[in-house]
Image 1: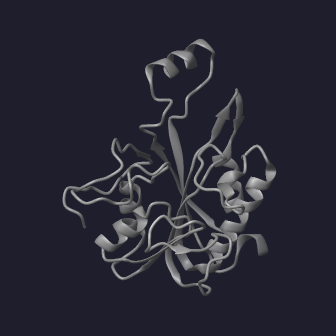
Image 2: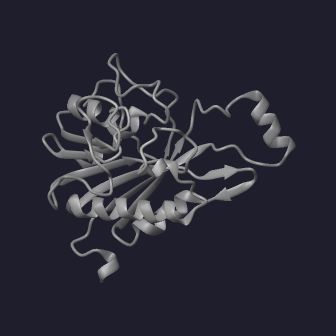
Length: 232
């Protein structure tokens, strides 16, 4: 266990910085980078040394860096790999056998708000206002259910969208999808920092024009059961 870090004990996680310690975990300049503390907390609770952790949307490699430091085996995939130790694969069709992963972590796009790449199959190029977005996330959920060992855990980081006063409850919609394939364990609220709207002018606009800035992400934790809930 990393010195100076404490396992979170409540369902409200607030990490003011992306990284911890004196070594990088992922690239904090990468758009949409995952806070390393999240992955660290999850693998402390749901894995042990030597377990295999899989990240199907590995981004800048935060999951890989944290897991290697904590003596977990790890495989990171992305549709457009950011660095050499991330394998190229679509999260909807991973090159893995059934039931091999001890834990799966996903930090997926929650709409088309961030331009990750121009790959034609990138889910992040689909707006969450389009029902197809959730159809594609369900394919990812099915694939996670396939590669995960029975009774093991997965966690998915996601946020809602509010755009031009149109609200899409992305987190609730995803939760409903995951319930088809997994047993709910808990939902964590992760405070958001450093987003471009966290400025005095945007806070003033939110008050003046009666809308809310995004202040948190959902961290949905689920467990694989022996028989998929959708088939019972």
